[in-house]
Length: 345
Image 1 (cartoon, rainbow, N blue to C red):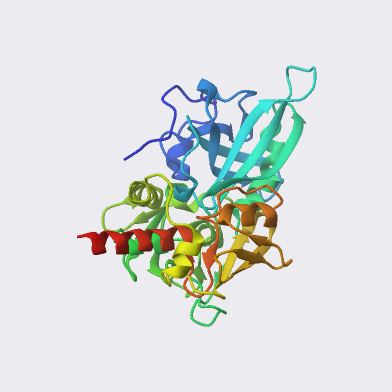
Image 2: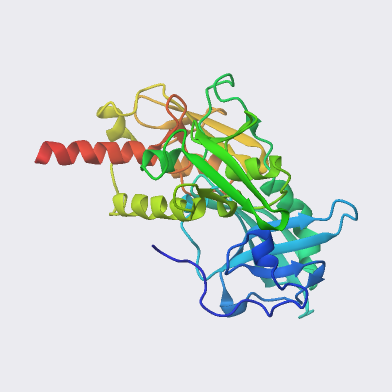
């Protein structure tokens, strides 16, 4: 299994951080930037890391002070398909003459690509406190729903794991909270997580928040009950498998998919850009072009997504999803390839 984490040491340990990882159920390699209100004076990520994958942002309920800010250091940009909904913070030198200031870029993986949610400029060593509110909002999705009664019968973020055979519908999940002496239980349902009280969540972080553990990365805290494997590890395995299957130069264009009737004229496509609260739509035309809601036409998925998102998103094959079955254009492309391989054998 690939490991994107850097091998160099994490920031220096905090005096008050002893046992924090264990009590909070954090990964062993989690870098503690803030613990018990004490902060590491960090203006550059160790080892020239690409970014800090946030696993916990906790604000004290009584004082409103940042109590915990932790993440995993990434040596290089990971495949966004393995990190949907995750938040990464990058620190870059501030565009000023002051060497003790940084700009903090906040990236979110959406639709298989890393999208910049915001950049907070000119921050000192207290940057975690300045960005904690925004990061926690992104990590605290309010997605409780009943998938059987909600419009469109939504499918949760665990669906790829179920499709790959790593999880089964109805399978038990556990969430360990050593600090509180608790073990929460849930079930996989409709590719999401259903708690014992019946509430359903499309994403692991939403379920974790509902249990009172706010602003933490649910992929790191929910485990497959039968063997204790983290959902994040299962997601990484699925991402690697997908990357292997889709490797290779180029592929059929949209017109080819329409001609093969894998895509149909009039098919509706959608891209939900969660971090901005935007929903972009497109329609497949007879010649394979995509027509956006503003009437503009584009010959490639990437051109269409750039036009819709004003250049903020560049990868179109994995971001556009067909509304009727929630499949990406890349998945439809793979179907075409598989059909061609069968014909050649």
